Amino acid sequence: MLPVFEWFYEHGDIMLTIRTTASGVEVPVDLRANELVDFIIGAKPTPKLQYDKFNITAPMRFSQKLYKCIFPWNSIVRISSDKAVIQFTESDDSSPEKADSRKKSVKVTQLPRGDKATRHLKVVK
Picture 1: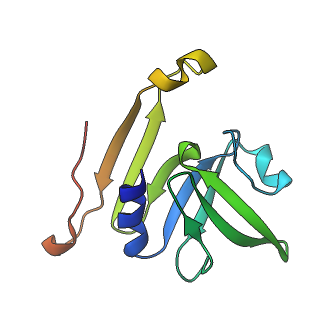
Picture 2: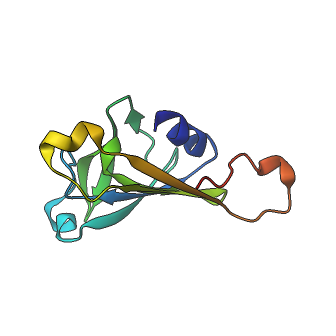
């Protein structure tokens, strides 16, 4: 997941769709009312963003209050930008004993562009 995120992040602002019910997600309580929430991140909207092999951490403002948001990699459902969209899905079996064997599938959709030099992703089925 990290190389995919880095590709998007180096190309500008991105929108993350986060499953707020995933383990380890830290967002304001009122946002947890929705299972899926979109967040815009990038150098300008989240200049203090940090990421590592476990999660993305970004201080963000909600109703004039600063909140430290944490998005574990397994909570990300979609990453999108003006260059591409990538959608992640998991199998329906979410039992803890089968957590290691769950398969993640990826669907990548490249947005149409006139400039062929900007096309770096391919559709994966």
